[in-house]
Length: 204
Ligand code: SAH
Image 1 (cartoon, protein in one colour):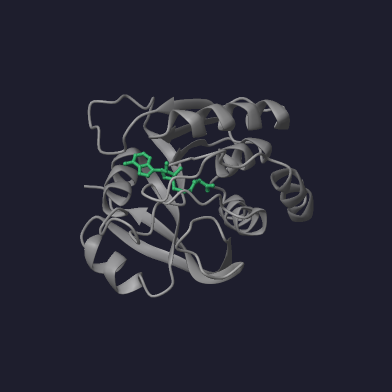
Image 2 (cartoon, protein in one colour; image 1 turned 60 degrees about the vertical axis):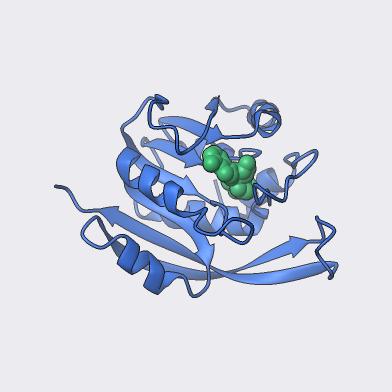
């Protein structure tokens, strides 16, 4: 599948019915999702790989990974409503993925791992400080390589937070357009500069 075709397929997916500000529910725009997924595909981290989407929301990244030939795909999100949308989106794409409702912090929750690859667009911590940390921790526990979307400028934090646990292998800059979603959004659309960061776990 070509990048443009993937982008078009993801463009058609349904989004959050009632997005929650406290959970920072922003669907990854199709061009950004396709960028992350193709980057991972080129590194050999999608096709025939087991893939986990942490904080999958409406399943954009999970569906994209399945469309690109992942061997199996699992998505986890706290919000049961979003999981329902993710299931419908997978059906629309004609792919299979397992979607689980649960908290990334819940260490007792079985996720059917280990996984080769974790993909995630976690909360950036704009509403709740440090909301991204449990995602990084869980990702490093479940997967060997992690492709995550972070606010531009997060690299020094990620580097120190992952010290001794993972190395940063690549960073791709992207623009993340956020449409006016919540009352506190003043502009119709705002482009947030983000970085797609590839982390590789350091094996103990
Ligand atoms: N990955 C999706 C959604 C990004 S928004 C996409 O790319 O479109 C961030 C997602 O993280 C939301 O769906 C939110 O419900 C989820 N989330 C926030 N805190 C969580 C937690 N503690 N455990 C699991 N999911 C969480």
